[in-house]
Structure formats: C-alpha cells, structure tokens
Image (cartoon, rainbow, N blue to C red; front, side, top):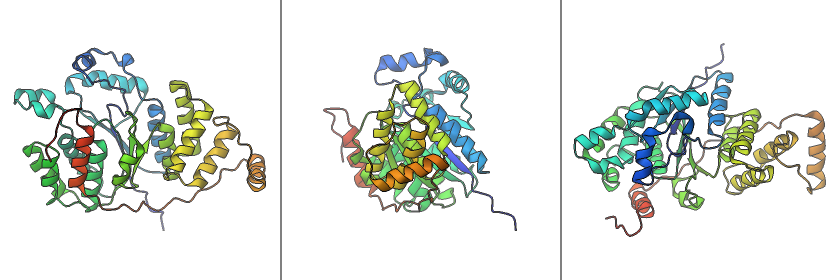
Length: 351
C-alpha cells in the first residue's frame, strides 16, 4: 500500500515590517517608498534564510509548498518589491498589493490605513484557491492588526468563529461595510478546516509578549527569527541545518552574538512556546557547530549525555507535539482592547 501523500503547506507573510523593514510612520516615509531602489530596501534579519529553508525542508518531506505575501503597499511599487524579492533569491507563488488609488478615487480616505477588512478578504479569497487539506503557517508583526486578522481567519476556517458573528466584530473594528459583506460571503464559501497550525508575530515594535496571551498558544510572539526558527523546528517545518543557518544570518545581518542567541532561545522556552527537550537538543547541536556558546556548569547526568552525544554526533529526535489547545476568543472584547492599545495618544475610539 503506497504511503499517504503529506498535506500541502502554505506559508503566508505580511510584507511590511515582517519581511521588509518598511518605514511608513510619517508622510515623508510614505512618499519615499516608491523611489527606493530594490537594493536600498532592507529585509528583517534572518527572514530570507528562514523562507529558503522552509521551502527546502518541505520539499525534502515530499510536500507541495507555497509562499504568499500580502502587502499594504500600492501596486504602483510592485516592480520595485518584486525586484527586491528576486535580488534576495526569495521564491514565492503570489503577492497581493492594496489598491490605494482606488480608495482615493472613491473618496474612501479612511480605508487607506484600514487593514483588517483588506487583509481578511485577501486571506479568505486565496484560501479558496488552495487544496482543501492544505495546512497553513502565518507570519505577521505587531505594528498594526496582524494578530487579530490572522486569528479571526484561523477561527473562521476552523468553525470556532461563525459567519453570523463576523459583521458585528468587523463593524467594531471599523471595517468598510462593503468589505464586511465580502468577507462574510467569502467565509461562507470556504470548506471548514482547522488548517492554521501557527501564527508567528514578529515583535518589531517590541510589544510586551503578555499582551498576546488572549490569542492563545497558537500565536507565538517572537523577538527575532531565531525564536521563530526554533519553534518551527519543534513543529518539524525546519531541520537543524535550517535553524543553524537562520542563527548565522542573524549574527551576520544584525550582529547578534552567540550569547545573545542563547538568551533568545532561553526566553522562548521560558515563555512556554518551546519544549525544554527541544531547547536541549538545539543547544547541543548549535553549540557543537559553534553557533551557540559551549554549555558548562551542568549536573553530572547532563554532562555525561553531552559527552556521549559529542562522540556519537547524533541529533536528539523530538516527537512532534500535539496541536495547541486553542481556547475560544472573545473577539468583540479583543477588538475593543486592541484598538485602545493601538490608538494614537490622545485619540478616543468609541466602543
């Protein structure tokens, strides 16, 4: 009997602040973006290496793999973005830009900075183009509303959030009525599946990780892509070579020392997203490759295990953990809380 074909895997990325270090905090930054040359655009340290290794490992596992980007930038700068991706050697299957010019022509200036309705409809529309059994891993940042958008999308797919509940939530989020109707229609058309394995949030603005606790263990807030790589190794989307390469990229691109990387690994383990056995395996292998500092000062048994492994050079096999127990999310409350947290100073948002 032939072995079962593994499920396709889709990695979806927010482009701005997650892949590119886009600066659009001021009008001056926004005006500058279209005139930047591809070589002037800066990637987030480690991201190019991470995507390349995610694709490699998926292919070695015999999985169909797709990478998609979603950008809030206008299509007028698509060529510069695509040239930058080509310069990085980043393979991808699709990229979606936000048609800002259409909003200006229709006088919908509020929609220029509104991302919830835009990104949610893009995610739902693309899902209809994937095989029904495709698994997904989502990558975003803490700059605007990626945690909220990705979590709503995941729960709509899984049936934890119903299409009947969606309008009230999106109204509270300030989404345009046309996009609310479109999101509801798209959500009703997709086949239900608990397909989103993880949501990774790059803490670009250094938000305290505890603010993401209401999103449950499915969402992992990470201070750098080494922490994400370690958790992706735990979920068997990366191998030890891939984790080592991401760590080396961070050392080269961001100047992170071996001690800083070791502290980063300890932090993601201490916050409960990485199993201690996985941390142990990574520390051993990465120290042996001189990516992390050598471990000293442990008890007799760990030192004996270290001695044996150093001579057998065998990576500890780690069983794939069960999917996280994802609690129900009160989105009406969460949207209100999120808006208050992200409102500009002095601005009052109605409940």
